[in-house]
Image (tube, rainbow, N blue to C red):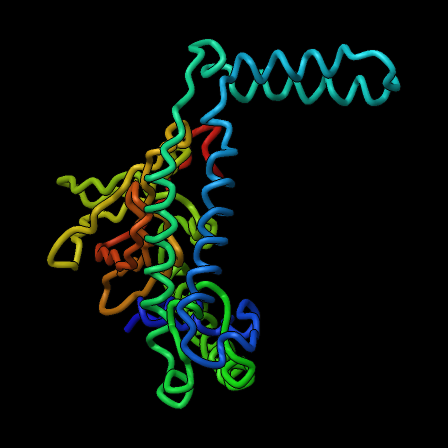
Length: 298
């Protein structure tokens, strides 16, 4: 069995609900006006943050602004040097975009759809709460936006504390089993560094399965076979496009049974509209190795 599953991840989110949920008396009973107010506020904040992304601004104009700030009069030598350094770093970081003069028109409708996608995901997770808590929730949509009654907030505290303890135990077991399996590899490596990394491609080859990650790193499972009936969809992340979806490895664990290695990766998939799906990628094979290019991600 694997420990870091879809259920484990949902419980991981739920286990911190008591930290992120704010008690508000307006949530004591169903209140569509209060929900609409919070929803609109959060949505506007999300859209404003999305619009502030550098991808929506002319990189040449931004560099010109930074250079003017560095050349401004009436500032100290240290401040001028700091501004020059910032402009130089900006120029280096966005060299290709500055050369092309490329930027995108902001799509407010798409940003709003992404916000709705995230809220729908969290709403679905919060619907998993046990009945002794869920029966006291007046509007689970409001909970997903971060608000609940004082009674619900109080009930969440012991529930979340117990869930955090349970999930820590499961993660410890996964780490211990992974460490034991790694001792049997021809060349061990640190699997935990891939947690939070973007998966860009799953290659099924004659010699096995190769998992390609952002930055050029690869994990190859020799003589590997994907255990899922359908290979998970992978959204290739593109940091230079605001319309990119992404597939991120939330967790990873390795098991060794009967001479076979099984690599289990829990994937968070988000399409360009922010619709999130949690799925597992399990690959079994005779060995697992890491390929790190010079200048790779890790």
